[in-house]
Amino acid sequence: MATAQAAPTFNDSAHEVRRVLWIVLILNALVAAAKLAVGILTGAVAMIADGFHSSMDASSNVVGLVGIKLAAQPPDEEHPYGHRRFETLATLAIGGLLLVAAWEILQTLLDRLLYGGRPDVTPISFAIMIGTIVVNLGVTLYERRRGHALRSDILLADASHTASDLFVSLSVIASLGATALGYPWADVVVAVVIVIVIVRTGIGIIGRTSNVLADRQTLDPDDVARLLEEVPGIEETVRVRSRGPADAVHVDIDARINPSVTTDHAYAIAKTIKERIRAEHPEVEEVQVHFAPQRNAPVDYTLEARAVADGLGLGVHEIVTVPQSNGVALEMHVEVKPGLSLSEAHRQASELERGLKERLPSVKAVLTHIEPSNEHGSELLLTEAALHLRDEALARARELFPNAEWDQAVLRLALGGYALTVRCRLPGSISVDEAHNIAEQVETTIRNEMPQIQRVTIHTEPLEPGAA
Image 1 (tube, rainbow, N blue to C red):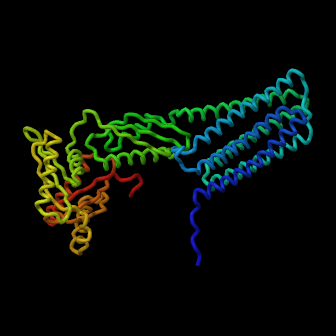
Image 2: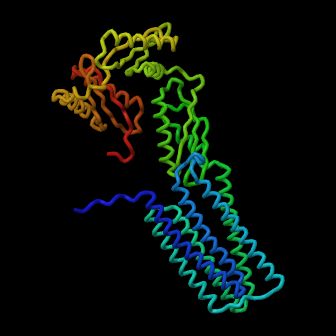
Image 3: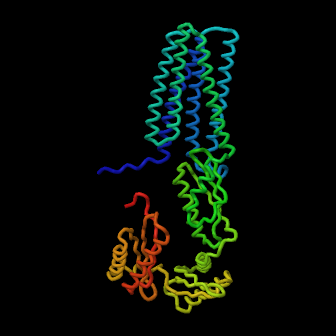
């Protein structure tokens, strides 16, 4: 009997990436050594410059090896944010080495300009350059293929770097050919071009890594703020900060929410923020959300009632605000633990009423409808009659509005009968008023036609893009 093979773990993938980098490192080191040796022996400055440039490929392989090794280490007491900065420091060192290599080549160029001389072009020079081009082409194809197979950004980036060397090597061959035809100045010109390429690459590396070390903003704060405008519960996005390398961005969000938002609600808001940011920016590794109460926020009686109820361990729903001449009255359903005596349930509801009046002086009256919570009610609903009633109500909703998607119907016990909860998915382009009218019409119809169902709650949601 065949057994299923386990999916490769991160450590397995990292080990394979390191193996590829070691192979490429050895090949790049051999290519660089061959160019430098022949360039020094023949006096070809362009070939020496290309040799230094190829040595940087080997250095980038070392950076990749170090980065993969450190990336596999989890945060510890001394490095609570991980070890990614070591990779950044190593990359910064490579940028410095590139500038040192450029300076060494410039010194050789100055000697050539001051004291003259011309390279000794031999068939070996052409053979070495053609051979290195073949090796670089093979390395590029191999790294790119393994990078796609292993989904390794390091291998794909290094393959692109190696591919750029092909153009430099072709320039060196052109300079050797021009020198052989009697134009020795071509050697110096091509060497200057290569120096410019090396300096530009080195400065670019130092600039990028310095920005990472200095915690420069990685994402556009305005773009992130616009992304969070439609997150339910956020009153205002105060500040957006981001830092880190392009493939491991850390984001800090400061947002204002209503002071009455409960801990569970705040957690749900923070989760939505993280999901939206990561969906738009997959390179984000971590999102920290900090909440502050909204200044001078209008009273949200629903949130206030839930906040007081949570503090007492009670559940509330269907909270209705009724304006009065001297304030407001609140009407709500209060869920208590099943099995409580009527006296104890009434005592808890009275405590909730007192808490609301103390918290909100504008609340003049609180009307509560006590009912058992659904902690142990699911087993009681597995009867043929209850299931038939649920399916009948769901079918009636679909009959009234067949263009909407009706699902996730849940029926549970309530005082005097049943409570029904249904999800209704509608096109996101319709107005809130239209969605409310649809829900209200279905609720009224079901209660009128099926008197066993005392309460109907319909959760309206937008249809996901591409959903049928």
